[in-house]
Image (cartoon, rainbow, N blue to C red):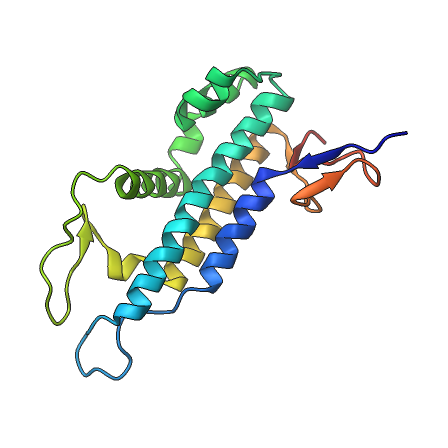
Length: 200
C-alpha cells in the first residue's frame, strides 16, 4: 500500500512565527541611556522579525479556514479559497455548521485577530512610508500604533498566543479538534489523522 504525504500549512505558519519571535529582543530602547533612546539595531531587527510573525499568524488563520473549507465543505475552487476575505470564510463555515458567529465576533480574541489583520494590511498596502520626525525618542507610528512599543518580543509572543487561543475557541465551537501531533510534512503511514484540523 502506497503512503501518501501531506503538508500542513498551519504548522508551517506557527513554526515560522515562533522562530521569528525568538529572534526578537525585549525592547527597542538602548539599555545604557538615561532617557528613552531607540536602539536602531534592535528596532530594525524587531520590525523585520515582527512583520514576518504578523504575516504568518494571518496565514495560520486562513490556512485553518481553508482546511475546513476543503475537508468539511469539500470546496476546492480557487475563487473561494483565494479570493474571498477571511471574514467571509468564517461566515460560510458558520452557516455550514449552523452556528452563530456573533459570539466569536464579540470575543476579545476576535478583536485581536482584526487588529493583527489591519496591521498586516497597513504594512503591506501602505499609503505613506513616513514614520514621523526623528528625535531622541521618536514616536514612529503607523496609524495609531507606536511601532517601537508594538514590535517587541513580549508583545509578539502575546499576539502569537492569543491568535492560537482564538483558533482553539473557533475550532471548539464547531465541534472539531486540533491534531496535537500534526507535523509540517505528514504521512498516513503511521496514523489515519494527518491534518491539523480533524473531526473527532
